[in-house]
Amino acid sequence: MTAATLAPPVRIGKAAVWALGLLAISTGALESVVAPTLPLLQRELDISPSAGALLSIVLAVTGALVTPLAGKLGDRYGGKRVLIRLMAVVSAGGLVSALAPNLPVLLLGQILQGAMIGALPLSFIVVRKHLPAGESKVAIGLVSGMFVGGSMVGLLAAGPVAEALSRHWMFAVPTIAVIGFTLLVNRLMPSDPPGRTDGAGMDWPGLLLLSGMLVTLMLVFVVAPEAGSQPLVLGALIVLLAAFVTGWVAVERRAASPMIDLRMLARPVIWKSCALTFVICLGTAMGVFLIPQLLGDSGDGYGFGASATGIGFILLPGAVAGTLAGPAGGLGERRFGSRAVAVAAVVIMATALLALSVAHTEVWHIVVGKALIALANGLCVTAMVTSIVSSVDESDTGIATSLVLVTRVLGSAVGGMLGGALLTAGTPSGSDVPAESAFVTGFLIAGVVALLSLLVVRTMGKGVEE
Image (cartoon, rainbow, N blue to C red):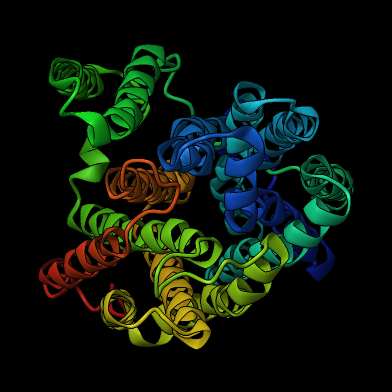
């Protein structure tokens, strides 16, 4: 039986949309608990800034692998069906993280939690199948914004919970919420019909090569700060990375049903959206990693020596800005077009990062800078997703939006690991506190990259007419 012979999907009510939003809040909270407590975790687990950066982005890297797979399965078998199963994996990951006695087990938990990134394209599939075009854009913005808004809950609660109880409970509490809201979505959300199938199997070679590529990329950033003592290892990793990239591109071009459709990626509206999303998320990840480190450190004339609870409160305005930016990005794209929203996001991002490279000695510098970074990220990512949703067939919604979301996590991974590499390289021998110049360099690099992305923005269509 084909999708065309099935009855049209049932229009969903507000309760079902809000159930998706509440699930997004709980997963966002689970995703964000590491950020404000990273200095605490580094102390308790006795790990370096590079290892801390690995902990902060391994979830995103897993998301880069799971997201295209989830999008393809959702297009093929139905968004709700895949979403519920995916959240079972996320719940298992949260429980592993909550019980983790050491770094390797905690990394395993974060890897399993990374499946939550794949929940976004699945939510978009469900929303688009059950709502008209105009309402679906607003609903996508709402779900995206509430996912970011969940970070507000995580940032605010992680520090007090970790300090009052233990680091284990800061993972356990949002995991319980994920389980509860998954059951609610399963009850309120009607099943969406499966999409078209092309008869081809899953692209497991492409997935394996992409896995190798991302793992090798992480190892490059881990080894890079100590390249002087082991140059051959770094060189071998770079050669291996190039081999993985070459092999992956060759496999994806020949696959009957590729994991990531490079032909779709070649469409201007999609590759430009992906390029811009990568840059914005690189800048966001740089800020998300460097700012808590700066708040937790106490150097000569810089740093604040803040506790995990204090860091959470300082980061809270940024989470609020990110929450508001999600729906605003969807509304802005619909009214003004994707290019206008993208220009605003890039200018805001570059301004915030370059300003932080110069002024970062007062708490209000950090509060304003982080809020602007979160605002720019939310505006850009939501506008790019809604723009792509409008440009592809309904049956391709999952795989098309997963391209942007994969780019999002790749940008986040590169930004986080680059920040960790800079801090490790900038830590004087015999000291645990990175030099101020390492923070300045990180903010400056991300700000300049953001400015250069205006070259891509100026070639984009306005988006309203499209």
